[in-house]
Length: 109
Image (cartoon, rainbow, N blue to C red; front, side, top):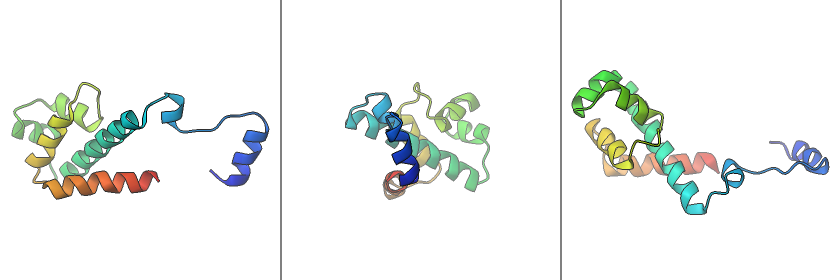
């Protein structure tokens, strides 16, 4: 948001902040959510780049297409463990995972 617009809104009594501020998340909770979102986006991007369907990835994971859809949507029922398993099934390395998290953090800044 432009500084001038922000200043006008604040002058009119609006409080501006992030979603984490609004939800009163601790820094640890915000970092956890950001990490999960980064892993989900990375999973989807990697799957699409390889030309795989959700069904094909589900078959590799001995899971279902709907579960892969939930993984890609960062559904709360999906664990980070499962997201990592999905990424590794798509050929990601630990370095690739770290890069996707780092990239996400730099985009948010």
